[in-house]
Image 1 (tube, rainbow, N blue to C red):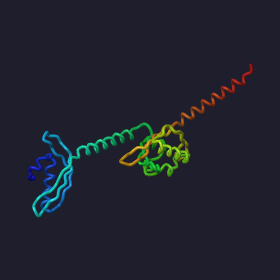
Image 2: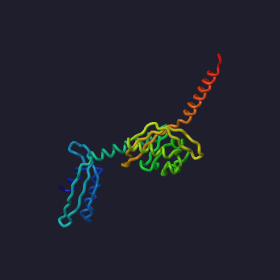
Image 3: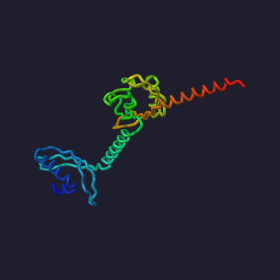
Image 4: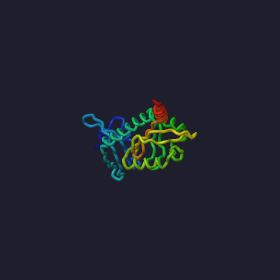
Length: 219
């Protein structure tokens, strides 16, 4: 087909892009490699990958295009899923952190997580929990991560973390291995149960005191 006939297959917005590419190929011998849209006979838009090069000696263009609509849709679906995840991650009322699976380097954390640690974002992201001295018992955390790597997830593990001022907080830690941006990562959520554990301890003391008092009554 002529250039004009070939351009008719493409959407109005894509025609000048391809026309410029073809003319550069014919005039300068520059090949082109483009992702454009075409219109089917039914008027449906399809995404295509088109490649071409010029045979200057015979004043011809050789090229082909491949329908990549499904591939582009899959990419869009992944992008939308990652955007939804990002919004939920940042707005979650639960402390959450995304880190590398192997060394536990923080890739991203939400505001609740920063509030729990009482650290600014720039002090956390890009560093590991070990570097920051977050875990009170590093060996226990290592054992839990080993279990996670074997099972794919862990749920409601009681651990202890420390804030920069040395204050200890009791937490329930849940995590699972996920793939974000093509990389295997660790998505963890943290629930601060410090006050709950204190309340439980207080109830036990009160119960012990009542039991002792009852046993001391002489009839």
